[in-house]
Image (cartoon, rainbow over all chains, first blue to last red):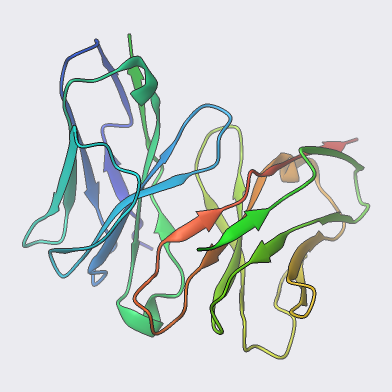
Length: 114
Length: 117
């Protein structure tokens, strides 16, 4: 079965650089969530999209922006990277509404900022 | 606001024995969903089991069962017949009211399970 695809899987950037993380949801899933998991931490919700519109926003820094495109893939753009941005970034997708009880997680992108 | 509490940072269990992972939650929503995810050292988040707040039966999925006690606001995960491959971090998570469009997950701090041969 198709799963959520995230690219790249690993990314190394220097401070003050920018990074773009991509997420390709499972076919027919139109809802995408982004989570950030710092070392030894639980995942924290960043932002979500439903039908290409932002549906909810969590503790996402102003340096980060995201969008969902017409093919439902999503990109998380991160600028002026800081050491504290080093984390595992998950994308999850789900069906809309009550059919979307389960969120399917991608393998994650491990971002290291040096 | 929702809060998930997992009070066991780490647990050891003997292979083939059962283990119970504690999870308590706090929410003002009348309807909500509770989840358990497994995160092995490789990092991926693997969905294990789901319990809806209005489900009368405790959820079961193979060797996983969820001991849901609504009045006590607890949703403990029971893993039966532990296997070496069960060694991982386990997260309890909650989703908001089903008709609220609040579908983001709030996670607990996690419990590390180590299965000994």
